[in-house]
Image 1 (tube, rainbow, N blue to C red):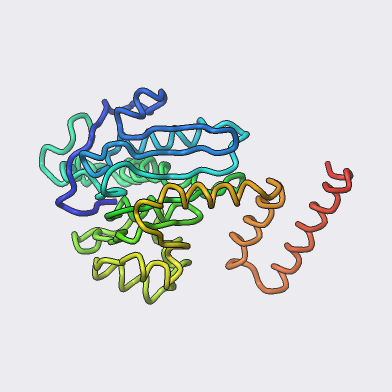
Image 2: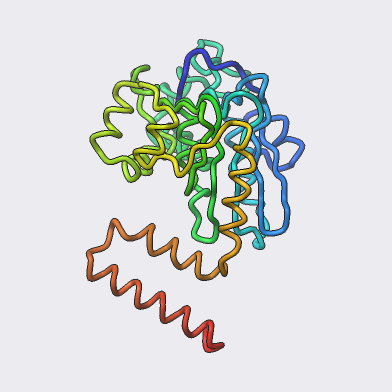
Length: 280
């Protein structure tokens, strides 16, 4: 959950709010743009290096719930020099963020309440891998802690050559808890994932591409164009075929070889019948 202690502060909203309206989303640092089948989610607190707060997480979760069914591809980008400097440093202070439970209050909660609070935070990070969407993170500058995990939430990552990832939670005595550990391990393997998390070191763009953490690195000035080009390529294929392929690949690690072959046959049967006009 937490990240760099030097991360600047970000806006908040009263507890109990759900970030349900676009105006509230932008106050919390999130903006949504829609262009037909493409949605663009922008972190828009560049003056605070897009530091994350519970209000931002509520807004991100609300964006996911609000997407029209016509959207097929989502690009996640950020304004300013950093993708996200991680958790708002005010969360580490005794006073915390006004209107939000700080770490001390969370620690004092009973097990059920604490689990529910963290689960609610995770909602901002889980919808990006929905089977009906393909999501692309465009990452520049620093992606620290919660910022790293938000980039990991997406299916694909395009990074600027100045991108730097770090998972600082363990260095602060905590653990990454925003749904980032599974995709990180799947992308780079257990040993490298453990080393990245346990040391909190920086992973630069060239290593990210070399290890499979990122799909592509480009000059910073070309980042938005590269993400849009990838989105256009993803939109060129029929939606049902992309969704079926994504489901096959997402489930592959948990299946045996024979089970995966069976899943391929079932998926292809659905596609053939659909293309022949014989589907449900």
